[in-house]
Image (cartoon, rainbow, N blue to C red):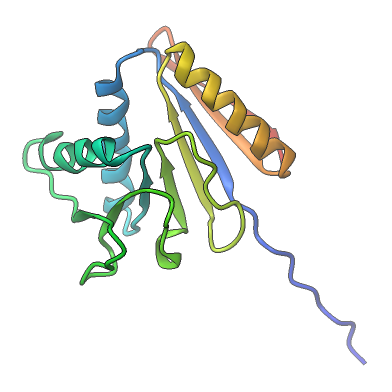
Length: 164
C-alpha cells in the first residue's frame, strides 16, 4: 500500500523594495514600473491601496508613467473586469483570482495564504513609510514567510533574505 501523500500549503514570498527617496511620486512611479513588468511577464496583479485617492493616482499614473506603454487596468469596485489579465486597483476586498500577486501600497496586511503567491511591498525612505513597513515585516516573519528585501543605497540595490 503506497504511503499517503500530503500536500503542504504554499505560502507566499514577500518582497520589500525600500527606495532611497522619500517622494510619494517616485514610490508610485516605481510601483507602475513593477506592475508593467508583471503584465509584460504574462501575469496580472492586484494593487492594494490605502484609500480611494491613492487608487485614483495609480490609475492615472498607469496611463502616463511611460510614453507608449499600455497596461490594462481598472479601479475595483466589486465589479470584475471583462478580461482576466486586467490589473485591478483598490482596497481590501481583493477578488480571489487577483490574490496571486499583490502589490501593497497600503498599511493593510494582505492575505498570506493560498492563492497568494507573492506580496510586493514598496516603501519610500520616509520615517512614516518605514515604520509601517516594519510592522508588516514583523507580521510576515511571525507568519513564517520568507522575506526578500531590496534596498536602494548609493545607486545600487542590496538584497537580503530572512524568514521562511
